[in-house]
Picture 1 (cartoon, rainbow, N blue to C red):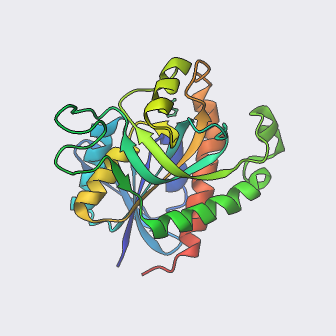
Picture 2 (spheres, rainbow, N blue to C red):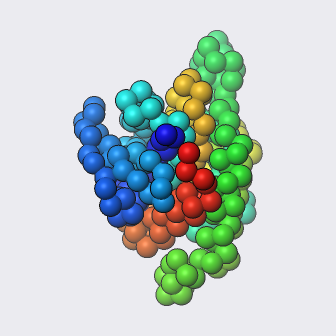
Picture 3 (tube, rainbow, N blue to C red):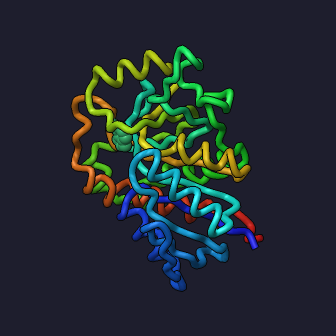
Length: 253
Ligand code: ADE
């Protein structure tokens, strides 16, 4: 029986997922609560990722080692870096890089030593499935968020993007810093704090991985928005709807 791991970056997202799993059982490992149950006929293990690369990598490793997860999907929010990546859009990562990895001059900047690469690829099949689920949800955003929420957050015609997501142990909240990141990694669509670390762990275990991030801010001087409200009213509803669509579109195996 296939086991799907769902790592949520935020409590509100995890709570929304758990509300769909009537039979979940809690298993505590390494100070984390893993929730094992079923959703749309799939065996699912849901867990809070925790914040930052090391914490998320540990959570991912436990999912793979102890729960034999054979597909891992991460959901959360991110700061938009790409010029047309706006608040309320969703980015499905096709590849992930640690923007704060720098062992130069021993290794090229961003390359993870001894891996011979900076970029870890997301699984192409998962990316296609999740991008399609995301497009369906965003195409009907009014149904999932309501007109009032769309208006309150000035969201109109939210878009799905696919491309590079970069991760580092820093919340990017100044225009100066996002400018530096854009110069160093011009293809980056979004910045967050976990994805590339989880992608590296999944690479080590040969387990397909994908990450879906709702853009909560533009990683600039205004990146201080009321996160709790955005997460509760926008990001966690998107994550739930995208995951639900995705699971419905997959045949349980
Ligand atoms: N997650 C959401 N917004 C972010 C930002 N601006 N920087 C890092 N992680 C984020």
